Length: 382
Image (cartoon, rainbow, N blue to C red):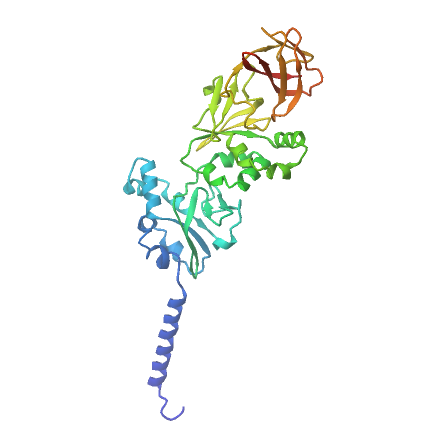
């Protein structure tokens, strides 16, 4: 042993090194709970919920890799108001642990890595989270906007939210789970996921199938890419959504206002028709509404009976194969529109008879014009 280097000195040196290493380790191991959530004055309700459900340990785990979507205090207050309760009522929810785990991913995702339409799996596997990244750079998790991004720690990252996420099945889940590929793609592109994933909304969606989109593309001499490039695509999509949950048994003949602002028209005389589309699968319920499957894309302007001077009339036979009889009309100009608003036939009636034999099978409108106004009827060609 070197002169002056005693056992006591060795112990002191070892202790000093140990304390320094421990201090360095403590500085290095920050975590999403202690260093972000617990220190934030805007997330005290979230901290209270985590503490009550004893989830701190999972968020403090130095070996974890986490992304936490952290609803702020206003988000919890808004949820309490929507549920007619208060924060104490929120903390008493029997599924609070499930709600909290629905806000946590087992990977680290910063805001720059989010892609529009990404679907991610939280620790609560009851449902996925649908991400939206808008053209202006805003990021949403389901209906909640990120109002504070990329709060990083050694075991993960925190994004503050303006709303609480709930693991409810929404109308978007119904569309995804039932293979509505084109409808889902359009909704994502037009940045409508936040509206349709709102767990506390009440919506009725008339959902066109992929075949319906293909038929529209064919009618417009384009393809799906062409449809997705339509400048009025958002208006078309909102024309398929009605506020409130309207089951098939609640439908009645007549106009129904949509989120587009225009009316669709319900006709129950032959099954259930919405404008010139047929409801082929009714009452697919979700926690925030209902989805009715239809066989044609609804196009705004083709069935708005609020149009001045338009009166709905009946024609026979309906369905028709060769000729269509328009009762109480003799010689009048007419036009026939397909389900996409295109005029496919025009002429003048003879004794109220219109030859429809050359039309393809499907759903149509016929408009009759005379000096007293415009009259409209729906018919099926077989």
